[in-house]
Image (cartoon, rainbow, N blue to C red; front, side, top):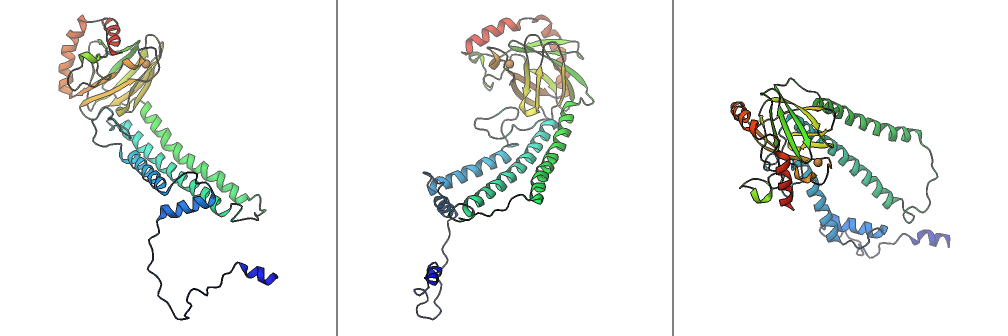
Amino acid sequence: MGVELANAGVRPCAHRGGGGGARELPPRKFVDPFRAIHGILAKVGILGIMTVGMLRTMFVLALTLIGAAFFGAGEAVAAGRSEPWQMGFQTPASPVMERIVGFHNLLFSIELMIVVLVTGILFTIIVRFNSKANPVPAKTTDNTLLEVIWTGVPVFILMIVAIPSLKLLYYADATQEVEMTVKITGNQWYWSYTYPDHGDIDFDSVLIPDDELKEGQPRLLSVDNPVVLPAQTPVRLLFTSTDVIHNWAVPSLGLKLDAVPGRINESWVLIQSEGDYYGMCSELCGVNHGFMPIHIKSVSKAEFAEWVETAKQDFAATEDQGAFRLTDASARIR
Ligand SMILES: [Cu+2]
């Protein structure tokens, strides 16, 4: 009886090689990995309603997302703003933003490795140590070496992340040797810009309503008076506000600073090439928060000098008209 039971699991292979001679093996079939995974999942009982096709689609989608996150940044989209369905960062246009993208890629690689590792461990446990495959669990408990490793490895990973993170934080924060200063003031709901080094040019920058947009002007991002800044010039930026907290954010330049009433925040920017760069207020500041965009026009140093001369005259007369025109503009958007 005991012998019979012991042998019950082992099937004699009488039907194979029945003739006793060496039979040729059938040609190896292609193993569909998705079908194999599907089979394993079905066995373990965590399949639900998923078909092989759905598994395949999920895999392709995941690969696409990972690819887009890696290669989306830096693709030749319209510089200075985002595109419909864009998945990565905007094309970096300042040294700070370039470093932010680099740091993101480092973080993403580390995260990807952790996800792969944890998922692998999870599936191994589900498949090899479920109650069917492993009916009698081991009674092992406490393992000092293992505990040291799973405390030490995450600490090590955090250190790898912390060092470049802090370096980048200080690089973005510290004002470099600058050639000029621009003061940015948030108002409900438009931005004002002052150039203290250029005869105190001072103007408001107000949204252009939909019905006044010209060809090529992006909706909700265009303003009547863009901030003009010379390219390849380090500029000190000072931020403050007259009413509530606003936030001056330009993604392609890696800038995002609060404009707080009663205090001045400071940052710096070096725009690498000429062009248009767009941003938005990024601190919920009231009913027209969505209607106070930022438009930076980056020009050559010579063009900037010309602009300064005309701006000195232009903005002498139009002072304090911004608030009135804004009420107008926001009413026509909705
Ligand atoms: Cu706002």
